[in-house]
Image (cartoon, rainbow, N blue to C red):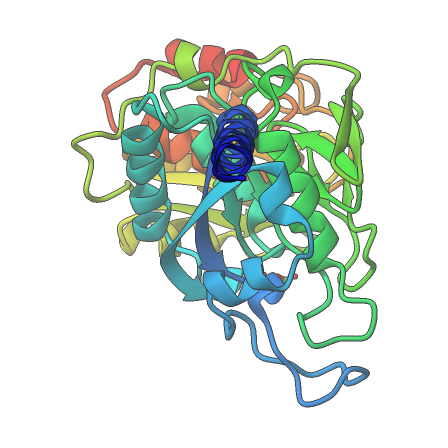
Length: 357
Ligand code: ASP
Protein backbone atom coordinates (compact mmCIF):
# COMPACT_ATOMS: atom_id res chain seq x y z
CA UNK A 1 0.00 0.00 0.00
CA UNK A 2 2.81 2.34 1.06
CA UNK A 3 4.74 1.59 -2.17
CA UNK A 4 1.59 2.30 -4.16
CA UNK A 5 1.28 5.80 -2.58
CA UNK A 6 4.97 6.43 -3.20
CA UNK A 7 4.76 5.66 -6.92
CA UNK A 8 1.53 7.65 -7.20
CA UNK A 9 3.16 10.73 -5.64
CA UNK A 10 6.25 10.28 -7.85
CA UNK A 11 3.94 10.12 -10.86
CA UNK A 12 2.15 13.30 -9.76
CA UNK A 13 5.44 15.13 -9.20
CA UNK A 14 6.62 14.09 -12.68
CA UNK A 15 3.32 15.22 -14.16
CA UNK A 16 3.55 18.65 -12.50
CA UNK A 17 7.18 18.98 -13.58
CA UNK A 18 6.34 18.02 -17.18
CA UNK A 19 3.44 20.48 -17.21
CA UNK A 20 5.69 23.22 -15.83
CA UNK A 21 8.33 22.47 -18.50
CA UNK A 22 5.69 22.55 -21.25
CA UNK A 23 4.44 25.83 -19.88
CA UNK A 24 7.96 27.20 -19.92
CA UNK A 25 8.53 25.99 -23.46
CA UNK A 26 5.29 27.64 -24.57
CA UNK A 27 6.22 30.89 -22.79
CA UNK A 28 9.63 30.83 -24.41
CA UNK A 29 8.10 30.68 -27.87
CA UNK A 30 6.12 33.88 -27.35
CA UNK A 31 7.87 36.98 -28.68
CA UNK A 32 8.46 39.86 -26.28
CA UNK A 33 6.58 42.94 -27.43
CA UNK A 34 6.57 46.31 -25.70
CA UNK A 35 3.58 48.60 -26.28
CA UNK A 36 4.34 52.31 -26.06
CA UNK A 37 1.11 54.23 -25.63
CA UNK A 38 0.80 57.84 -26.77
CA UNK A 39 -3.01 58.36 -26.75
CA UNK A 40 -5.46 58.84 -29.60
CA UNK A 41 -8.95 57.54 -30.26
CA UNK A 42 -7.82 53.98 -29.57
CA UNK A 43 -7.51 55.20 -25.98
CA UNK A 44 -10.60 57.40 -26.29
CA UNK A 45 -13.82 57.22 -24.31
CA UNK A 46 -17.28 58.62 -24.99
CA UNK A 47 -20.45 58.97 -22.93
CA UNK A 48 -22.25 56.19 -24.79
CA UNK A 49 -21.60 53.54 -27.43
CA UNK A 50 -23.26 55.44 -30.25
CA UNK A 51 -22.26 59.03 -29.60
CA UNK A 52 -19.95 60.78 -32.08
CA UNK A 53 -18.35 62.94 -29.38
CA UNK A 54 -15.53 61.53 -27.24
CA UNK A 55 -12.23 62.44 -25.61
CA UNK A 56 -9.01 61.12 -27.15
CA UNK A 57 -6.39 59.59 -24.86
CA UNK A 58 -8.58 58.88 -21.84
CA UNK A 59 -7.81 55.17 -21.30
CA UNK A 60 -4.49 53.82 -20.00
CA UNK A 61 -2.39 51.21 -21.76
CA UNK A 62 -3.09 48.58 -19.07
CA UNK A 63 -6.85 49.00 -19.54
CA UNK A 64 -6.40 48.76 -23.32
CA UNK A 65 -4.44 45.49 -23.09
CA UNK A 66 -7.02 44.09 -20.65
CA UNK A 67 -9.72 44.86 -23.23
CA UNK A 68 -8.29 42.59 -25.94
CA UNK A 69 -9.19 38.92 -25.44
CA UNK A 70 -6.38 36.50 -26.33
CA UNK A 71 -3.70 39.15 -26.82
CA UNK A 72 -1.42 37.60 -24.21
CA UNK A 73 -1.43 34.33 -26.21
CA UNK A 74 0.17 36.17 -29.13
CA UNK A 75 3.07 37.76 -27.29
CA UNK A 76 4.45 38.39 -23.88
CA UNK A 77 3.52 42.05 -23.48
CA UNK A 78 4.74 44.98 -21.42
CA UNK A 79 3.06 48.37 -21.65
CA UNK A 80 4.53 51.85 -21.13
CA UNK A 81 2.66 55.12 -21.18
CA UNK A 82 4.72 57.74 -23.06
CA UNK A 83 1.96 60.36 -23.34
CA UNK A 84 -1.82 60.38 -23.50
CA UNK A 85 -2.79 62.96 -26.10
CA UNK A 86 -4.99 63.17 -29.14
CA UNK A 87 -2.54 63.09 -32.02
CA UNK A 88 -3.59 66.61 -33.04
CA UNK A 89 -1.36 67.50 -30.06
CA UNK A 90 1.52 65.28 -31.18
CA UNK A 91 4.75 67.27 -31.09
CA UNK A 92 8.36 66.84 -32.17
CA UNK A 93 9.18 66.60 -28.46
CA UNK A 94 6.97 63.52 -28.03
CA UNK A 95 8.23 62.05 -31.33
CA UNK A 96 11.83 62.42 -30.09
CA UNK A 97 10.89 60.74 -26.81
CA UNK A 98 9.25 57.82 -28.63
CA UNK A 99 12.18 57.41 -31.06
CA UNK A 100 14.74 57.44 -28.24
CA UNK A 101 12.72 54.93 -26.20
CA UNK A 102 12.36 52.65 -29.25
CA UNK A 103 16.13 52.71 -29.77
CA UNK A 104 16.78 51.91 -26.10
CA UNK A 105 14.30 49.04 -26.07
CA UNK A 106 15.24 47.54 -29.43
CA UNK A 107 18.90 47.35 -28.40
CA UNK A 108 17.88 44.80 -25.73
CA UNK A 109 18.00 41.09 -26.50
CA UNK A 110 14.74 40.45 -24.70
CA UNK A 111 12.69 42.86 -26.85
CA UNK A 112 11.54 41.44 -30.20
CA UNK A 113 9.30 44.23 -31.38
CA UNK A 114 7.45 47.41 -30.45
CA UNK A 115 3.86 48.52 -30.90
CA UNK A 116 3.02 52.22 -30.63
CA UNK A 117 -0.57 53.20 -30.01
CA UNK A 118 -1.27 56.61 -31.54
CA UNK A 119 -4.06 58.81 -32.81
CA UNK A 120 -4.79 58.52 -36.50
CA UNK A 121 -4.74 62.26 -37.30
CA UNK A 122 -0.95 62.56 -37.37
CA UNK A 123 -0.06 58.85 -37.34
CA UNK A 124 1.63 59.07 -40.75
CA UNK A 125 3.91 61.86 -39.49
CA UNK A 126 5.14 59.97 -36.43
CA UNK A 127 5.42 56.76 -38.48
CA UNK A 128 7.62 58.53 -41.01
CA UNK A 129 9.68 60.24 -38.29
CA UNK A 130 10.36 56.86 -36.65
CA UNK A 131 11.02 55.28 -40.04
CA UNK A 132 13.94 57.69 -40.38
CA UNK A 133 15.23 57.67 -36.79
CA UNK A 134 14.84 54.14 -35.36
CA UNK A 135 18.15 52.31 -35.56
CA UNK A 136 17.01 48.70 -35.67
CA UNK A 137 15.48 46.28 -38.13
CA UNK A 138 13.24 44.76 -35.45
CA UNK A 139 9.55 45.44 -36.07
CA UNK A 140 8.09 48.78 -34.99
CA UNK A 141 4.36 48.83 -35.59
CA UNK A 142 1.99 51.75 -35.12
CA UNK A 143 -1.69 51.29 -34.48
CA UNK A 144 -4.76 53.37 -33.74
CA UNK A 145 -8.48 53.25 -34.20
CA UNK A 146 -11.21 55.37 -35.69
CA UNK A 147 -13.79 54.58 -33.02
CA UNK A 148 -13.24 55.16 -29.30
CA UNK A 149 -12.95 52.22 -26.94
CA UNK A 150 -16.51 52.75 -25.67
CA UNK A 151 -18.15 52.69 -29.14
CA UNK A 152 -20.35 49.94 -30.51
CA UNK A 153 -18.04 47.92 -32.82
CA UNK A 154 -14.91 49.66 -31.55
CA UNK A 155 -12.10 48.86 -34.00
CA UNK A 156 -9.25 49.36 -31.51
CA UNK A 157 -9.11 45.89 -29.88
CA UNK A 158 -8.67 43.90 -33.11
CA UNK A 159 -6.30 46.52 -34.50
CA UNK A 160 -4.18 46.19 -31.35
CA UNK A 161 -4.32 42.39 -31.51
CA UNK A 162 -3.13 42.43 -35.13
CA UNK A 163 -0.44 45.02 -34.39
CA UNK A 164 1.01 42.88 -31.60
CA UNK A 165 0.97 39.86 -33.92
CA UNK A 166 2.82 41.85 -36.61
CA UNK A 167 5.35 43.22 -34.09
CA UNK A 168 6.09 39.70 -32.85
CA UNK A 169 6.44 38.23 -36.33
CA UNK A 170 10.05 37.73 -37.54
CA UNK A 171 8.74 38.27 -41.10
CA UNK A 172 8.03 41.91 -40.22
CA UNK A 173 11.73 42.58 -39.72
CA UNK A 174 13.55 44.97 -42.05
CA UNK A 175 10.41 46.50 -43.62
CA UNK A 176 10.71 49.83 -41.83
CA UNK A 177 8.06 51.23 -39.52
CA UNK A 178 4.67 49.68 -40.24
CA UNK A 179 1.12 50.83 -39.54
CA UNK A 180 -1.56 48.23 -38.89
CA UNK A 181 -5.17 49.40 -39.23
CA UNK A 182 -8.31 47.53 -40.19
CA UNK A 183 -6.39 44.35 -41.16
CA UNK A 184 -4.04 46.19 -43.52
CA UNK A 185 -0.30 46.57 -43.05
CA UNK A 186 1.08 49.82 -44.49
CA UNK A 187 4.61 51.16 -44.91
CA UNK A 188 5.46 54.50 -43.28
CA UNK A 189 6.56 56.12 -46.55
CA UNK A 190 3.35 55.60 -48.45
CA UNK A 191 0.38 55.49 -46.13
CA UNK A 192 -1.94 58.43 -45.67
CA UNK A 193 -5.20 59.15 -43.88
CA UNK A 194 -7.95 59.57 -46.44
CA UNK A 195 -11.22 59.80 -44.50
CA UNK A 196 -12.10 61.91 -41.49
CA UNK A 197 -14.35 59.23 -39.98
CA UNK A 198 -14.35 55.94 -41.93
CA UNK A 199 -12.81 52.88 -40.28
CA UNK A 200 -11.03 52.13 -43.57
CA UNK A 201 -9.26 55.48 -43.53
CA UNK A 202 -5.64 54.56 -44.31
CA UNK A 203 -4.52 53.89 -47.85
CA UNK A 204 -1.12 53.56 -49.49
CA UNK A 205 -2.11 55.03 -52.86
CA UNK A 206 1.22 55.06 -54.69
CA UNK A 207 2.94 51.91 -53.48
CA UNK A 208 0.21 49.63 -52.18
CA UNK A 209 0.10 47.49 -49.07
CA UNK A 210 3.02 45.82 -47.33
CA UNK A 211 0.65 43.04 -46.31
CA UNK A 212 -2.46 42.05 -44.39
CA UNK A 213 -3.08 40.73 -40.90
CA UNK A 214 -6.18 38.63 -40.33
CA UNK A 215 -6.86 37.83 -36.68
CA UNK A 216 -3.11 37.87 -36.12
CA UNK A 217 -2.19 35.80 -39.19
CA UNK A 218 0.13 37.90 -41.29
CA UNK A 219 0.66 37.76 -45.02
CA UNK A 220 3.38 40.01 -46.47
CA UNK A 221 3.23 41.20 -50.07
CA UNK A 222 6.14 43.64 -50.33
CA UNK A 223 8.90 45.58 -48.63
CA UNK A 224 9.13 49.36 -48.95
CA UNK A 225 12.03 50.21 -51.25
CA UNK A 226 12.95 53.55 -49.68
CA UNK A 227 15.82 53.88 -47.22
CA UNK A 228 14.74 53.55 -43.59
CA UNK A 229 15.63 52.66 -40.00
CA UNK A 230 19.06 50.94 -39.85
CA UNK A 231 20.08 52.34 -43.24
CA UNK A 232 18.97 55.89 -42.41
CA UNK A 233 21.62 58.56 -41.86
CA UNK A 234 19.54 60.55 -39.38
CA UNK A 235 20.65 60.32 -35.76
CA UNK A 236 18.51 61.96 -33.09
CA UNK A 237 20.28 60.49 -30.07
CA UNK A 238 21.57 63.93 -29.00
CA UNK A 239 18.80 66.06 -30.48
CA UNK A 240 16.51 67.91 -28.06
CA UNK A 241 14.83 70.36 -30.43
CA UNK A 242 13.83 69.95 -34.07
CA UNK A 243 14.17 72.84 -36.55
CA UNK A 244 10.90 74.62 -37.29
CA UNK A 245 9.38 73.82 -40.68
CA UNK A 246 6.00 75.26 -41.68
CA UNK A 247 3.52 74.16 -44.32
CA UNK A 248 1.75 76.67 -46.58
CA UNK A 249 -1.41 75.41 -48.29
CA UNK A 250 -1.69 76.74 -51.83
CA UNK A 251 -4.98 77.71 -53.48
CA UNK A 252 -6.33 79.96 -56.20
CA UNK A 253 -5.30 83.55 -55.51
CA UNK A 254 -3.14 82.53 -52.55
CA UNK A 255 -1.54 85.18 -50.35
CA UNK A 256 2.20 85.52 -50.99
CA UNK A 257 2.94 87.22 -47.66
CA UNK A 258 2.61 83.87 -45.85
CA UNK A 259 6.21 83.06 -46.85
CA UNK A 260 7.64 86.08 -45.05
CA UNK A 261 5.34 85.44 -42.07
CA UNK A 262 6.84 81.93 -41.65
CA UNK A 263 10.42 83.07 -42.19
CA UNK A 264 10.08 86.03 -39.82
CA UNK A 265 8.70 83.74 -37.12
CA UNK A 266 11.68 81.41 -37.18
CA UNK A 267 10.93 78.80 -39.85
CA UNK A 268 14.12 77.30 -41.23
CA UNK A 269 12.15 75.48 -43.89
CA UNK A 270 8.79 75.83 -45.65
CA UNK A 271 6.87 73.09 -47.43
CA UNK A 272 4.31 74.25 -49.95
CA UNK A 273 1.25 72.04 -50.32
CA UNK A 274 1.07 73.22 -53.90
CA UNK A 275 -1.76 72.96 -56.39
CA UNK A 276 -1.26 70.20 -58.98
CA UNK A 277 2.38 69.34 -59.52
CA UNK A 278 3.53 71.54 -56.62
CA UNK A 279 2.48 74.80 -58.24
CA UNK A 280 1.63 78.21 -56.75
CA UNK A 281 0.75 81.58 -58.25
CA UNK A 282 3.37 83.94 -59.63
CA UNK A 283 3.34 86.26 -56.59
CA UNK A 284 3.93 83.28 -54.29
CA UNK A 285 6.77 81.96 -56.47
CA UNK A 286 8.45 85.36 -56.12
CA UNK A 287 7.86 85.41 -52.34
CA UNK A 288 9.16 81.83 -52.00
CA UNK A 289 12.28 82.69 -54.02
CA UNK A 290 12.74 85.70 -51.73
CA UNK A 291 12.88 83.61 -48.54
CA UNK A 292 15.23 81.10 -50.22
CA UNK A 293 17.64 84.01 -50.74
CA UNK A 294 17.48 84.61 -46.96
CA UNK A 295 18.50 80.98 -46.27
CA UNK A 296 15.09 79.32 -45.78
CA UNK A 297 14.70 76.00 -47.61
CA UNK A 298 11.52 75.77 -49.72
CA UNK A 299 10.18 72.34 -50.70
CA UNK A 300 7.39 72.03 -53.24
CA UNK A 301 4.94 69.22 -52.43
CA UNK A 302 1.29 68.94 -53.45
CA UNK A 303 -2.15 69.21 -51.90
CA UNK A 304 -3.30 66.54 -54.40
CA UNK A 305 -3.84 63.13 -52.79
CA UNK A 306 -1.64 61.06 -55.09
CA UNK A 307 1.23 61.47 -57.54
CA UNK A 308 4.71 62.85 -57.17
CA UNK A 309 6.09 66.37 -57.57
CA UNK A 310 8.86 66.56 -60.15
CA UNK A 311 11.73 69.02 -60.47
CA UNK A 312 11.59 71.77 -63.11
CA UNK A 313 8.23 70.71 -64.55
CA UNK A 314 6.20 73.95 -64.49
CA UNK A 315 8.45 75.71 -61.99
CA UNK A 316 12.14 76.34 -62.57
CA UNK A 317 13.53 74.84 -59.37
CA UNK A 318 17.11 75.17 -60.59
CA UNK A 319 16.68 78.91 -61.07
CA UNK A 320 14.60 79.67 -57.97
CA UNK A 321 16.43 77.33 -55.58
CA UNK A 322 13.51 75.06 -54.63
CA UNK A 323 13.46 71.37 -53.74
CA UNK A 324 10.83 68.99 -55.20
CA UNK A 325 9.22 66.60 -52.71
CA UNK A 326 9.01 63.67 -55.13
CA UNK A 327 6.49 61.21 -53.54
CA UNK A 328 6.25 62.78 -50.09
CA UNK A 329 3.03 64.55 -49.19
CA UNK A 330 3.42 67.90 -47.40
CA UNK A 331 3.21 66.52 -43.86
CA UNK A 332 5.88 63.89 -44.52
CA UNK A 333 8.05 66.30 -46.54
CA UNK A 334 8.00 68.51 -43.43
CA UNK A 335 9.32 65.64 -41.26
CA UNK A 336 12.14 64.85 -43.69
CA UNK A 337 13.04 68.51 -44.12
CA UNK A 338 13.20 69.13 -40.37
CA UNK A 339 15.52 66.12 -39.90
CA UNK A 340 17.59 67.23 -42.90
CA UNK A 341 18.02 70.70 -41.39
CA UNK A 342 19.75 69.28 -38.31
CA UNK A 343 22.87 69.63 -40.41
CA UNK A 344 24.13 72.05 -43.10
CA UNK A 345 23.41 70.62 -46.58
CA UNK A 346 23.60 71.90 -50.15
CA UNK A 347 20.39 72.15 -52.25
CA UNK A 348 21.61 69.17 -54.29
CA UNK A 349 22.11 67.10 -51.11
CA UNK A 350 18.67 68.12 -49.88
CA UNK A 351 17.08 67.14 -53.18
CA UNK A 352 18.79 63.74 -53.06
CA UNK A 353 17.31 63.08 -49.61
CA UNK A 354 13.84 63.43 -51.14
CA UNK A 355 14.74 60.84 -53.79
CA UNK A 356 16.19 58.47 -51.17
CA UNK A 357 13.81 58.47 -48.20
N1 ASP B 1 -8.15 63.01 -33.11
C1 ASP B 1 -7.82 61.63 -32.90
C2 ASP B 1 -6.33 61.52 -32.78
O1 ASP B 1 -5.66 61.62 -33.76
C3 ASP B 1 -8.37 60.81 -33.99
C4 ASP B 1 -7.98 59.36 -33.97
O2 ASP B 1 -7.18 58.88 -33.20
O3 ASP B 1 -8.54 58.65 -34.81
O4 ASP B 1 -5.85 61.33 -31.71
